[in-house]
Image 1 (cartoon, rainbow, N blue to C red):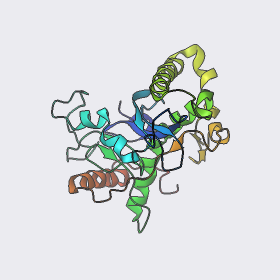
Image 2 (cartoon, helix red, strand yellow):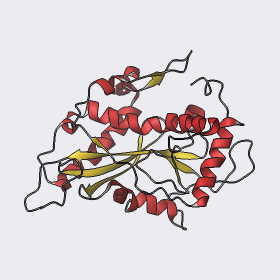
Image 3 (cartoon, rainbow, N blue to C red):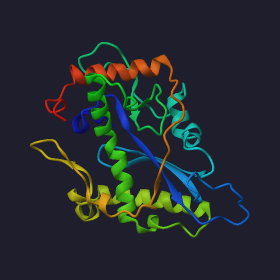
Length: 262
């Protein structure tokens, strides 16, 4: 998937986000699933496409692990870094109108480390205008992953309370729900009922102001806990250069007329 036509970000294969799914403490599990909030949980990482479809899910990392560990052990991360290219990702190519070839990336938030294949906003301090614009554009594209999790919490009410099941069963249920989510999103007859336009975040076509989706008003605070920010901030120079290439493109060839106003 290339999110340029919808979200104005080229060289993008999707947006990723994660949540902690609450469970009851399994028998004889000790502190294996005990998380930073004092709950028992497993971690789910979900990669969304531009139409809020689920392209990948990794669910089951036990809650005692720091959130960064879930991404570190994730099969998607390993596939992105593999020399064999099992995901069949296109080769490096320049952003439209640019000359420097760069890789295809995921968009993520502060829960994920900046890397060759992970594009995330700049830290929110002492930002230049170019960096502020980049943060707006990256966050705008990343919103699809936040909204797919909002859809799940709103439409699948089993996520609104701790699962009284073994972690393996919760993993299977989550995978089944995401399969059904994709089918309901793709089926023309059910799409408008399952996910009406007002359910998800949208933009005013005249002002480009964000209109929050109704899912944000209908989630209890304990539903699908957010991941913690990544602790690693010493990113390698290649990752920083790739983000800078995007930042320059957003303010130059990739400029959209409303971004400075926003």
